[in-house]
Structures are given as structure tokens and as C-alpha cells.
Amino acid sequence: MRWVVAVLLRGLVLAALWWVLVEGRARYAGYGLAAVPLALVVSLWLVPAGGFALGPRPTGWRQVAGRTGGVLALVGWYARQVVAGGVDVARRLLRREPDVAPVVRRTRFHLPPGPARQLAVGMYGLMPGAVVSGTDGDLVWLHSLDAAMHPERQWLALEERIARAAGLDLTDQP
Figure 1 (cartoon, rainbow, N blue to C red):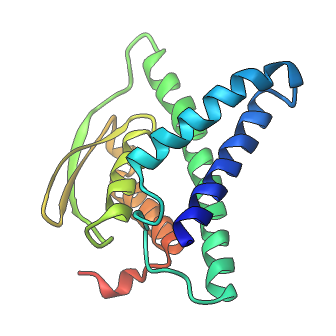
Figure 2: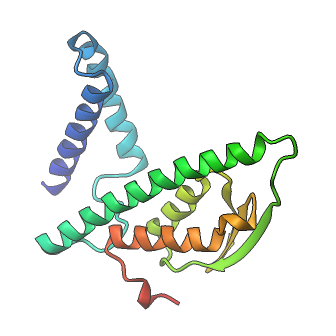
Figure 3: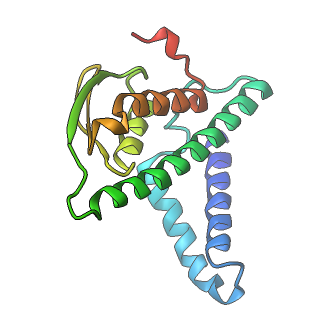
């Protein structure tokens, strides 16, 4: 029964997203009747209902509210980082003499192995001028266009926000 509810909720979220993307125009409803179920099938194939969790299941409304706040804080912070990073990268690369001095920094994961750690690697790689160039156990190599972008500080800030959104405690980690 829980699986059915999860699938229905995911379908409703995808339908709502479709409605927003087409700006509520009814003339696109036919496309939505094909796109939403297809997106639902693909999403269930990629992430089975109930099979993916960034952290422990919340047990009360306070935890749900805290994690919801964490997700909103993560999204807001990430959006600011992407915009500011994009402007910085464009500024550096559009000069007559590009202002880049690439660096690779090695640091440790603070998140436990699993989906939250994988999310951090993926999100960091989407930040302008930054990419994870490798991992080995609890070590991660951060490539950045310049040391002045403070890759270790960015990484830790990202991990802290993901931990809050996932309901994880980084103090328990090495």
C-alpha cells in the first residue's frame, strides 16, 4: 500500500510540474497525457518508490519540518552559488588574458557513503568552475578554476546543507 501511495504522489508531482511548465495551457494536455506517465515510468526505473533515501526516515512533524527547511535552504544556497559562480567564471574567461589558475584539492567526505554523498558529488560538479575529479574511499579530489574560489569551503558548505536536508548528523562522521 505504501508503494502505491508513493507512486501516486510522484505522479501528482510530475503532473503538477508539467502543468507549471506549460503554464496551465489546456491545449498541451494531450502531450501531458503521454509525457507524465512516461516520466513516471522512467523515474520509477531510476529511483524505485521507497528505494531511495538521503537519510533516515523522519519520525515526526518536527523532523519533517526541519528537513523541509533544510531542502529549501539547500536549494536557495545552491541557486545563489550557481548564479554567482557563473558570473565569476564568465568574468574570468572573458578577459583578454583569462584569469584562471586551476587547482586540485584533496579533502575528506563528511557525509556517510550512500545517496547523500553521491548527491554532493553530482551537485558540486554542476557548480560553475568546479568538478569532483576523483574519489577514493573517504577522500575526494575537487578541481576548481582558481584557489580563490575556495573549493574546500564550498564543498563543506554543500555537505552541511545536504546533511541538514537529509536529516544526517555530520558530527558522527570522521
